[in-house]
Length: 424
Image 1 (spheres, rainbow, N blue to C red):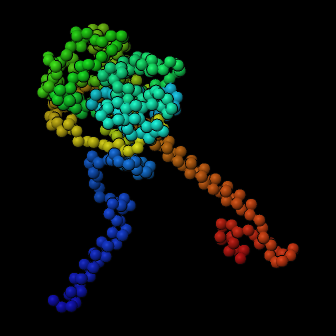
Image 2: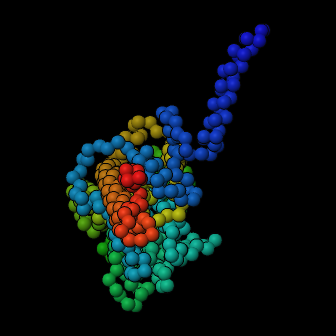
Image 3: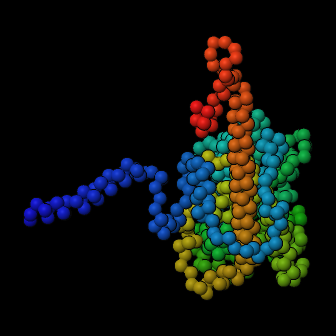
């Protein structure tokens, strides 16, 4: 091969090497400064539970994660969308976490006691299930939850139980009864995924049989709430057996736990017909959810974090993680079985549709408000800088040319370079 051919082969190789070396300088390993539009997204990837990233990074990912804007099926008012509370952690305000089974509540509950940046963080000791979450300088908890006060109102107490029990419990712990603000919060989950997750949990031996289900001052009788199994638990239950039990509390659990059960005679199914009962339950659950200080959705961890922070003016230390690989996600369902689960949870399906719509609208509304605030802040900063420059020009003394009076005055130097060129 002659020298000319060698040079022809060598030129493109050197060109490739030059590009690669240049890329290493411009986009070093681990850099986030270079982005390529490959049209691909990492499924299941999201914010890591590591050190909190900058606001711009976090908000950019929020925007990327946003579904397309769709017209709402519900006529929400601005009051429904606007969520911000003046939570006074140093006063008497209390955040009450209503923990619905298999909605990611355990993870969110740990965020509340371990992951919020506070003047006086919760004291969580290794080996202990509960943390001490006292107000700054006070021997009193600002958080009512499983990981702070324990199951003080019963195991997985619902809205009916908590709203009647929490004020009594909190006032017992403090002699001086000031007016308190109780801010109720909760987490919801896609009904089919939540139902499957509860089935898998019960299949492993969970029962929650110590739950009180208090309503109108009493627990339900055995006739009102029959158990689905004999023995200590329902270990090894198949999905078909789980679905076939008519008194299974997994059915429409989210609606039942968010509704005011006293409106329908508690667990007495004979107090009214089924259609009327379901209509009242769903309407009550929707109304209570809408009026809560905050609720999040398991499927939208980043937005849940963002809305909580904006609602309570609190910041998390580490960002939330979206985990899409769950036991429920790994269950292989036929279309017929999926439809059966949706039928058993048709109230929850309607509630979740309502909750998701309101949640995403609140997110979009809050982001728009934030953008407006940031634009106003930048405008005020620019105005302030202009005023400072004008004051600086007015305050600078004028210098005279020559040794005595009567000389021509030289204008004071300003930041406007072009005007000085004209004078020079």
